[in-house]
Image 1: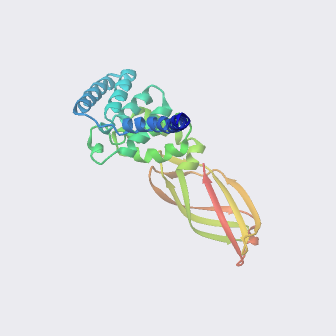
Image 2 (image 1 turned 60 degrees about the vertical axis):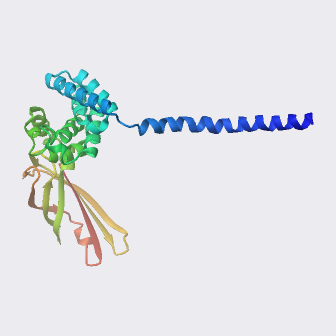
Length: 272
């Protein structure tokens, strides 16, 4: 009888130890879930609004460090009230470009049509992105975001205007901001005549001064017959911000005779 009781007690104790890891594993998950989906109380909401208003005042006074702290507290209390955009602006002024760009991206993700009606909101996020992209040499983001700044109050910001003027002279930026779509390609003895549209996707006034052109010829089976690359300089093509212009150029190439009715060609153009 005693042996049976001892075996039963041992089994019960072993079962408790086996269940313990499961309980310990589930507990943090439940806590994390409770925190993530925590209900915002009326007091939390009121405090969040108060902190954001106070942060707005500090931001207007140029106290960006203290304002960023209050925006963070407001976001923790009720992120539905926003604050990412304004905190991103503060981070921008503090030179914290990675944090500023992240906040701007988050703000754009959550932004509603109603948000854009608030004073100073329209154009702020892309403005932050442009300035951050300029300082981190992310020219693709700078080109794409700048077109969203166009027409807003931030398009007249002195820092923004200075950045756009400098980027308009940067070949790496121009290569990403100016796109070429060919409309016709005529193969002739001694070269190729190409016509198409140049589109400036950025908000910078760009003058194209050279084009890097790669011509690739393949046969009907896709085998490369030959490829060449040239740089055409001494160009002076003005492409206004957000506009497209018609342009044609001549690519000298004495190997173009390799392109015949049985050949295919592909033209790659990068403007700088």
